[in-house]
Amino acid sequence: MDILTGARIFDGTRFIEGEIGIEDGHFTAPGSGRRIDLGGGVLAPGLIDLQVNGGGGIMLDGRATVARIATICEAHARLGTTGLLPTLITDSRAATQSVLAAGIAAVPRVPGFLGLHLEGPHLDPRRPGCHPPQHIRPMDEDDILILLEAKTGLPALMLTVAPCAVTAEQIARLTAAGIVVSLGHAEATMTEVRACVAAGARGLTHLFNAMSPLGSREPGMVGAGLTLPLACGLIADGIHVCDDTMRLALRLAEERIYLVTDAMAVAGTEMTEFPLAGRRILRQAGALRLENGTLAGADLTLPEAVRHVIGLGLAPEQALAMVTTRPARLIGAEARIAPGLPANMVHFDDDWRLTRVWQAQAKSSTA
Image (cartoon, rainbow, N blue to C red):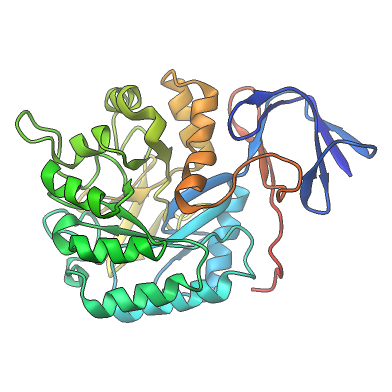
């Protein structure tokens, strides 16, 4: 048994005093064993990211295999994210089916793999962001059947859709099957968003980005996210959303916000560019952009996002909840430090920089 001491402990809800035992890949009550003094800082549950498009030089796309998913998960584990939803941006139906099949095969084999997030293709062509417009389309019955079947083999399946591309009946069918429906990439009104929430939609994808803004006569999707009971993802890099706007969102809806990276293939690498749907993405000055300047994902890690929001004045326990228990709760996963749970954990130093990661292994590490 390893016994970790010398750091504050955030158990997923609050800071507690004491020590942590790890034995056979699980948390346990401290007993006799090797004592490891961390010399300060904070221990927290392993971080969870619900929007990860790529990492380790690989994008999640129609070429997906268990090995490629493992590469993405391994890259983010080194960066502090011990659980994630690899995310497919808008693509063809064939590519979507390939990703779903690879994800189902990865479930028992890839550490950190919690399921999949499909961001599109059922979006609003008026708010495509960097998504390839040729693949954006409304949802049909074949899409529903593919998703319902895939959910039976995945621990979590999250789907970002635009209100104009789906019906309330479709949302209700998806949510009844346990699929998490999140709204995004849309020019939608508050009334349209309310109808989706009434049908079962539970989330809002990257608050403020690629959505209708808050207006004086029409709250838009931003207004809906700030007021309706939706779990809102936020890219806290200071680029996608400016700091003053983030402070406003945190003041109005902090308890419903969770942090995401929207990471791309460059995560965990020294790459300076990569291709996306036949277009060149450039990595410059902490941002990822198309050659025309459009943001294309983020060059961000969850520890960096935590440090950023703490720097805005957010209490550490709130910032840590945004990358542990809140995203975990949305997809029905666990992100706590408690006896018997898998030992997924990170250590931050006193300046909120990541120093160490512990990750429990899947049933088989073969990928």
